[in-house]
Amino acid sequence: MTSIKIECGCGQRYAFDVEPVNGLMPHTVACPICGADGTGAANEVISQSVQPVAVAASPGGRLQLHEALAAPAVRVAEPPVHVAPTTTRTTHTRTVLLPGQTDPGQVAHEARAKIFWGDPPQEVIKFLMINNVPRQEAMEIIRELTHERIVQMRKNGLVKVFSGILMICVPIGGWFGGMAVISIKLFAFMIMLGLWGFYRLIKGMLMVVAPKSQHGDVSEQ
Image 1 (cartoon, rainbow, N blue to C red):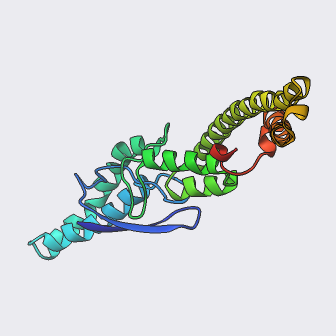
Image 2 (spheres, rainbow, N blue to C red):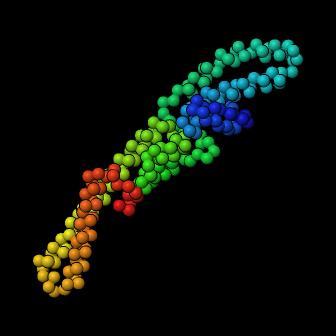
Image 3 (cartoon, rainbow, N blue to C red):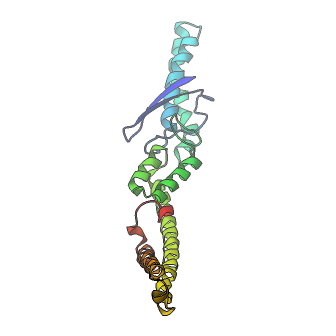
C-alpha cells in the first residue's frame, strides 16, 4: 500500500492509501470539495515513490545505481501514455468514496428532502459539494429540485382553492336555507367554516400564483 497526499488547486488537502497497479492508480479520485480530478497528481506521487525503491532493491552496487539513474529517461517517457486518458473528464463519476462521503443516490435523496423542507438552495448546494458533487452539477440538481417543488406547491394550492370555495358556499347555502332562523349556533358554525374557507382560498391562490414566496415544508402547506 502507498500513502497518497494531494493538495487540490482549490486549497483542499486530502490523503488515502492505495495499492498501485502497474505503477498507476487502479481507479479515479476527486477532490471532496470542488470535485476536481486528482488521479494525475496521485499517479505522479506513485511514480516518485516507486523510483527510489527500484534503486534500493538493485543488488549491483555502484554499477546498478548508474543504471537506475539512467532508467528515469525511459520511465519519464512512459507515464504520459498511460496518464493522458485519465486527465480527460467528460462526466462526473464518483467511483471511489473518500472517508465521510455518502453514496450518490443517498446524497440526491437527501438534497430533494432538504429542498422540499424549505432549506435555502445555497445551503443545499454546499451540502452537495461537500459530498463530491461539482458546483455546476450541483446547481443543475438544485434547479430541477426547485422546479419540482414549485409544481408540487401549485398542486397543493389548487386543492386549497377548491376546498376553500366549497367551505365558503356552506354559510351562503345555510343563509338561503333559513339556517339562521332554525339554529343560530349551527349557522354561527357555518360562518366560521366559511371564514376558514376564505383563508384557504386566499392561501391557495398565493401558492398557485407565487409558489416561490411560500416557505417551509411543502407537505405542511
